Length: 585
Image (cartoon, rainbow, N blue to C red):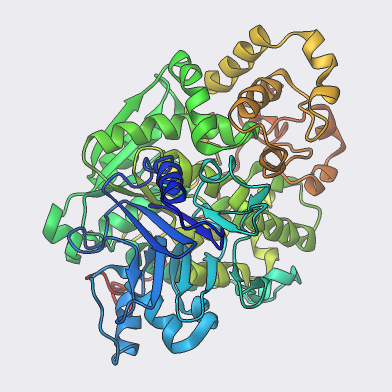
């Protein structure tokens, strides 16, 4: 992931302003340590901090069209860039960068080209012919982006809040699936798939359709010119990503450059569930496995850095971001610059344990819709910023546009959790990859119960955080919490502790408004808390708060996990490296 910063229409073209923009851009350099670029046209500034993953030799930014009248600064990856280049046969490209197509698409199609991009992206485009500009963010907000406004009438854009919070009168998260146009004078939604209106779909479940769609999503993300690997916790999602990658890596350009053996990475406390499961899956797949251990104290010592980089005070996000933050530093030290990760599956398939209590398929489906729409505030924010803190890029195939549309068009009845029928959470995904002739994973891994990342790294991690917060936040402080923090008032000592740190780094009111709030149990939305009256007495985002569902629930209840009935083998399928799935650059 790169870092982008733009200051547009600030009525100041002085050297002092240029120096200030450079200073602010340096705050984003952890995202892109490989090169820096700054373009100035009058009182418009476009800055870029580059992480070179595609075409490291010539893809420096900003990028331009042929006569340099259109200028673009981009953070992201465009997986279908080769197909788009073929459609733009009358255009000449300056670099081999996947993002080079954006300026030319704008030239050809105007602002409505954004939906043609298959990838993850945030970009600012300046058209110097009429001094207009546009800004866009990918469909569900895999890349982070903020927009702000200055008293001088300027518009500010930054990959992270720290690039603009000190200079804007107001700022906010840039909405995913939207673009902002100076000509239109505001936002326009470009991503509006059928599931977005939350009406209940009716497409019958076809296991092979899910399998094909997800394999294609993984394969297209093997596009890289640098060493890469997979994050492997041993849970269903990361294990499927690793399995598909290992299965299809051999024929790719990446394999020719860096070798055909896949590297995998796992983090956890000594003896944690993820370390054990991750090692087992790695041995099954034959990956070069790297296991990183941390202690509770290591994590506590990193909390301030995590909050500074991830820019949130949300308890769930901080709990999960810390081990990912520590692991990312270790991974980058090995020379790896890109990893594939498993975020998004639980939102799409209702994988969180609280979905066991969904009363009907309509409520189930609407909750998945709400969860996907909120991903940019939670898991996408964590995955993007925890890795970018050390110049590491995370790619998330479950959040592929085509795959989301395929999975979200299913009749939600097939996603419903029915233990009496052997259907545990994410049954439709597990069933799609249950191939007895050419197994993707061992059965017990394929049917391993959902374990939230902050739990799977070791149950004592969350318990240690709570104990540390209790030592640093007393009852008197909590009694005044509503007066000190009237917005999103922390209701636990752990939340209060994180909030104090956040406010020190980001004291502006706009900053605290970027963080979501509301009641939650086991990562539910506030609406889903209504599904079980008993949850109101156990409001914690950990999966162990799903009492009566999690095998290690907080109350110590012994929950039996039903084994699925025998499944028929799904026929083997051919390699999905078809036309239009390009991995060369």
